[in-house]
Amino acid sequence: MAKQKFKTEVDQLLNLLIHSLYSHPEIFLRELISNSSDALDKLKYLTLTDEKFKDLKFDPQIDIEIDETNHKTLTLRDNGIGMNKEDLVDSLGTIARSGTKNFLSSLSGDAKKDSNLIGQFGVGFYSIFMVADSVEVITKKAGEDQAWSWSSDGKNGFTIAEAERDGQGTTVILQLNDQGRELDSQWEVKNITKKYSNHIAFPIFLHYEKTEWEGEGDDRTSKQVPTTEQINSASALWRRNKSDISDEEYTEFYKSVSDAWDEPLMTVHTKAEGTMEYTTLLFVPKTAPMDMYQADYKPGVKLYVKRVFITDDDKELMPTYLRFVKGVIDSEDLPLNVSRELLQKNKVLANIKTASTKKMLAEFKKLSEEKEKYDEFIAQYNRPLKEGLYSDFANKEALMELVRFKSTTEEGWVSLAEYKERMKEDQKAIYYIAGEKEEQLRKSPLLEAYEKKGIEVLVMADEIDEIVIPMAGPYQEIELKAINKSNAADDLKDEEDEKKEKAVEPVVKKIKKALGDAVKDVKASSRLHESPCCIVADEDDPSAQMRQMMAAMGQAGNLPEVQPILEINPDHEMVKKLADTKDKQVIEDVSWVLLGQAMLLEGHELKDPSDFAKRMNRLVGGAL
Ligand code: ADP
Image (cartoon, rainbow, N blue to C red; front, top):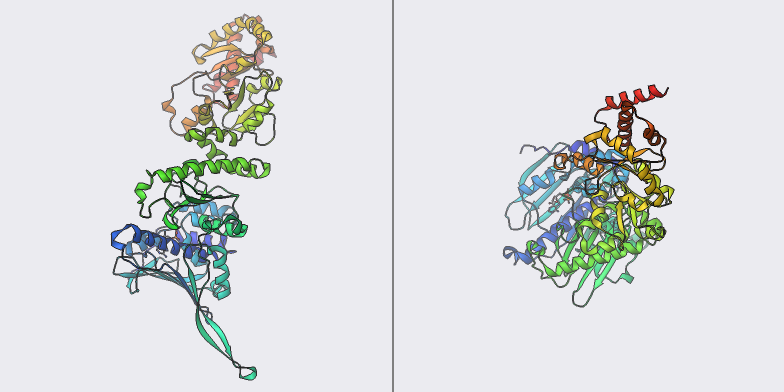
């Protein structure tokens, strides 16, 4: 049979895989075991839900055969769902379905630290080529008659041929390379399995030859006795009591459900008894899953009913914003044959989801008492939590306590609660400035008056802030106010300011006349200190940053063109002098230069830079 080509840049990928994972070749076994475990899960599910498979009797198990004499092969066998020809081409012929490009680019950077990406990108099977020169897969799909053999050396495509196999399931035969030979021993296989796959739900049997001694002294002889031994505990870890589970066991289990390499940032193990009976064992990874911002992210929570796997592909088990949570939910109340389609409307599940969400948020709150750990958490998950502010109305209060922001007066992250603590006695609102770049925001003239009065302003440079925060509404009845909106500064005004504003009215009129339609309004402002002017958006207009964001998303056309409001500083030299001048040209030039610089400071482009330069030069020329 002719060779078929792999569908993706396998060569390149393999090279990277082999080199980046060089230090952990043993993970191939975890990957194969987890594939088998999935295949067993799938078949078990069918026997419970599909008439066609109701009478199929099978004891789900995984078998590993080693070759301790010659160290040539390692065989792994399961009696799971198996694959037909199409499955083989689709699953083993295509790698990295969720994005080879992403995978390649992320690996080539700091390759080593990304070794936990392997599973996430669905290239798990290919890790075998770290330890094997070639592989043969013999498999028969449950309910079908024809078995198939798939072979490949991982480089030059693969061949598929008809084959024989007793019963459904999959056998993977590895022709080991030097690296693999070292792992082809009962000790290695036992250790690796214990380490990575101890708690998968099915028994794993190791078949090897045990050396047995007979006789005494010189008459002593040995013989090789074929031996079978179960090498994992095959207990669903989550069913055990918390107090009986060690940190190592939790970590090992976490690795088996998450493809992670390190320990979890957080482990939450809950047993609910009473009206609803269920167990959840949920983890928060130390680093956010790579696909967290992809629409087709892989859900991290598996659903079991009475220890029987139901699905790992249901995005509804957790709210979307908690998509970084990994683990299992095991319900005692759902019917075993619940169909995946009906799950979504299921009341029991909805209740579990609600309770689990509350529980996770409460755990995050607890974590927030440990500053360092929480900073680590926030660095990864601040943004999804903010998504929750607009998607999870029921938990908004809790989420408001969890999100963090940068601030003009404090280092690092601050909470709204801390901000509230520090508020001035007569301070009316929580102030924030939102935009694209933190550095630019920190230099904004809009901050001057707040700084002068010692009022803290939150600096929001996450693009999601501008959408979420205005909708998140008051925090404990205190309004959140964007300081780049026109009326935000009214709070800061005192009598003195009002007097000054009145005095500068003629100048305001002059500028307004000079700028015409280019601005929505010109106002005297009490918020400026050193700068002569700034621009702000009208209360209900989309802010400049919002416009830029929409433009970046190709949505600019959906926003009406709005003009900024120019605010001027009554105390500034330029403004004062403008009051005295009658020269029309000078008034016009100064007005346009004021507007131009305010635009530039907020990160905008000028509509007519050459006009700006001309006016500036004329003013400088006059002054010299
Ligand atoms: P992933 O497991 O992340 O999807 P893999 O490369 O490990 O990626 O496997 C690709 C696919 O091949 C699996 O999703 C599954 O459909 C199929 N497969 C692999 N091993 C087996 C097996 N032992 N039995 C049945 N199907 C399997």
